[in-house]
Length: 242
Length: 96
Image (cartoon, rainbow over all chains, first blue to last red; front, top):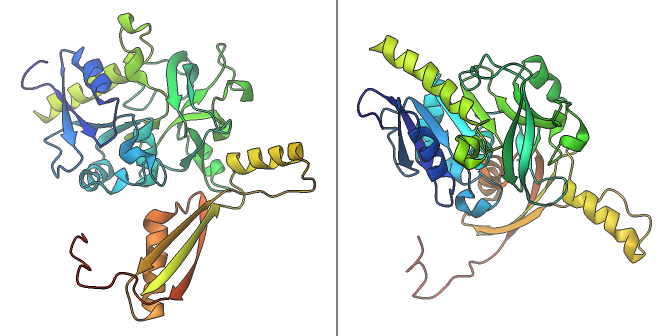
């Protein structure tokens, strides 16, 4: 870690989170980043420049994944932060929490296969004008692992057109050539949606785990660009504020 | 005190992977002509209160905020007035 002056990433730990260390580690490989944990009972984001809701099984997925975590004390601050334009990334269970908190559209149903999926997955990058994806190319095919039981993203009847019209889809499941086809969809998600942003573009939820492919020794680096995009964007912001 | 039964089902038009799987499985056991299988959740709770209207309002709010996710689920509930099940001197001792 770089000491003072770096980009502060607050990683929220809920009871049952299990990917917080992976996220912390991925960010710690950037000298400009200062990642740290926030406990779900905290009421203070400790001057975080970016909030990460990690993967896991917060509250044992009781009732619905993310349904209980959404009411954790810190989520009030996270919601205010997001509504004021703060950058929030939800990975897997974090994505589920963000939909339950109404910070992102839709909901995540059980996989249509009724099976837990866990494999390397191709994704197509649909947007590069977000703080999360500036270091990718539009249409680029990347490989990031999925690891979930409830990743079947859906929206209420008739709402999908709004989502497409607003261009909220950032990642779609695809085959290795970038074709968005049903066979490449691991969970039945509507229109192969793997990750979406809110209308303002400052909140991203995604089912795949970029932190697990963020350095060569992990077998892949395709997820690293999300973190480098965030560091780059926020570093510029930190500088201009100072 | 009211005993409340809350029924939560996948919303009309929302895919129901569990329901679809159950529906596909039934013919294998010889059950024919079964359609529209939907798998939901059934929650029972006891809610303190004297006046049914107020309790109903509270339950509605619980459903909307937590028990169901209105984006993907429909809910309904029934109320039945009961005498409290917890009685005696220990009542409330360990309650949160």
